[in-house]
Image 1 (cartoon, helix red, strand yellow):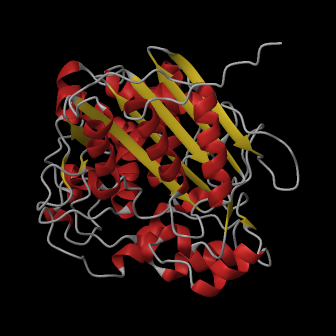
Image 2 (cartoon, helix red, strand yellow):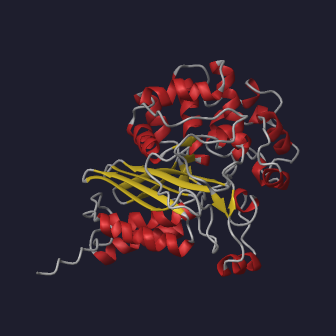
Length: 411
């Protein structure tokens, strides 16, 4: 579970610029006519280029629902992934943890301005860290998934059962990176703490909080936070792969040149990380789901089916620039990211864990829902694989006139 799945402003800027090149202005909320054959060709070409074993793209629009798949869920077989294939959603879990916290706010069981010490007195500087600062990644706490012992343990003992207390002890062994509220830094420690707050106030395990508050009411029958002792996924599921060790998924460390060369030559095969126990991630990234369920989830969350009107407004207004020098760039709020351009606002999140990468987003203006997942975390050239596919899908439906099928020959 990398520290951050980001749709960077530089990579997204080409979409905005392309709008003026190809005709529609950046302010349009309309989608181009969608050509599934063109989407399939793009996905096939991109996945082959990035050496992705398998991928699913689920696109819901006013024009209809489009599902494009590629490859296999298990190397060495021809088992195609589907929209109901289970995979680890990693940091997309944060949207769910944040939603539970916001429901507790609307029930007056806590305030966003409450100090963390009110619920957990053992956190360093907890008197000065608010619930809101945890949600919006501004606590200053050290990110435990950056600690080398975490990735080393995942590789050496992948079935190890982790507790929130254990990962927080790793985080608290490091000094804070900055005073609370003074900067943005994506940090899994924040959501490990929020999970504990939710459990304390709801007086039940986080898995039950999710099921009773979110998954059950929305009919997400294929979504769950597994038991901490479980390292398996429900059938049907995809295996998850990556080159090298878990450190390349949990941090921003690039692949060394020799690893890239060996993998490109075929002498180094990707590691199957499917059996890693996700308990180290839990409230920050432990949920298992499907493309179908994630599409329903992000549309319900952004569309106002999870929170009441007042709390929804606070949630929608929570994002603020990650980089103060780029006020029009990417923003992060209470467990959600957004980018605005013209009349469009894309609310999204992503997830990255050893073996899996994913993206989910909803654009209320065009009523477009997009879910992308892959079973290769990072490509050899350092691309976040679901992000790479997602950008091309958005380019296809917002900007570029779709490819037209060749006319059938006349017999």
